[in-house]
Length: 176
Image 1 (tube, rainbow, N blue to C red):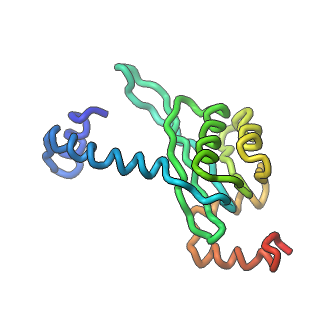
Image 2 (cartoon, rainbow, N blue to C red):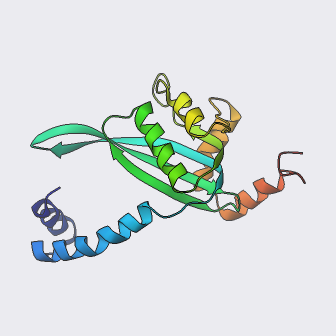
């Protein structure tokens, strides 16, 4: 999106007139903060992780191309939700997911206990499970059934709900 597109968008939606210079100043202040967030150290272990991509069209070099925003949402061992990263790539691929998981490891992630992948398409992304297993070999990968449905609801769960679920773990923390 060009600065002119952003100016037009802000004017249309909010009646806000802003100059290209102002947009540049805002961008120059925000980009270092975004980069700091993208490279921040992460927890060593996450109990539940959602791996999903949002597909969109973008204009690139005068052409409309397909892109994917790879999202990694997680719940840590204390029950806190955290967006670990958003990565922009071309069409969704297992190879790109492996690079995302490698980035998470480089930022300090040692273990993902359960990973949930979206399979809204007719068939899961070929090689996605293998990429997860290579990136986090001990990760449980629910592919269907109640665990997947539970995983689909956890992103919107409150801290109180997650505390209740943690209470179901038992004294050893593994369901016993």
